[in-house]
Each structure stands twice: as structure tokens, then as C-alpha cells.
Amino acid sequence: MTDRHPFVAQTVLDCPHPRRLAEFYRELLGYAYRPGDEPPDDGPDARGTDWLVLRPQPDAWSAGRGLAFQANAEYVPPVWTPGPDRPGDQQMMLHLDLAVGDPESLEHQRARVVGLGGTVLHDRTDDAEEPLYVFADPAGHPFCIFVSS
Image (cartoon, rainbow, N blue to C red; front, side, top):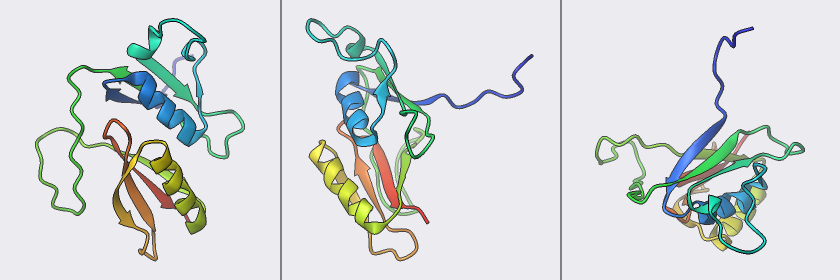
């Protein structure tokens, strides 16, 4: 049987240090390394300098897709600006949307992101319809965490 359509297996993030960024998202999302991508107990981390894949845990409350981290020596963090009139070049601006169930969880996740090395780019927690934060991960990729209703 031939597959009628492909499916999204993972989103790939370019970065200078794949292991460092993978660890940030592994801690934040509770994902696990694809078998063989785990950090070594000792010795050099050859895989961690090139390409790594994280996958959601089978018991996760959400059935998300994987994240991959690809080394790119020429990676330049995107510039994120709030609002509809965003200046910039022709690069495609993508970001991850992550959701939590309530405002208390949003605040808890803000503290976790900052503790893991992320930064707050924009605070929109006063929005009654969809409170959210926009963050940058340690490599500068923007992502949002919002309250999903």
C-alpha cells in the first residue's frame, strides 16, 4: 500500500550546538532522545555536534511531534519583533507554539524557561482572550507558550 500523504515527523532547528539546545527542549518538554542520540556517559559526544532527535514520551498528555537539532556553523539567530509590521529580510520566520491549560501553569512555565536559559521576548499575559509569553531559546529561536482554552 502506498502512503497517500506524508506526515510531519519533526521540526528541525538549526543551531551552533545541537546537544545544548536539545537539552533545553528535553528538559522543557519532557521529551526523550531517539535511541542512540542520548548523551554518552563519558568520552566524546560525536552525535551531539551534528544531529539529534527528541521525541515525545508515550505517556505525554499531548501527542506532539519530534524536534531535531542540526549543527549549522553559519546559524544566525532570527530577529523577533512584536506586531504585524515586522521588518526583516526574506528569511522564513517560524516559531513553535506550546500550550498550557491555565494562567498558573503559564507562570510556572515562564519560570522554568528562564531557569533553563531561555529569555522572555514579549509578555502578553494581560490579554484576556489568549494570555501568552514569547520566549527565545538559548540559540535565539522564538517560541510561544500560551493558555489554550
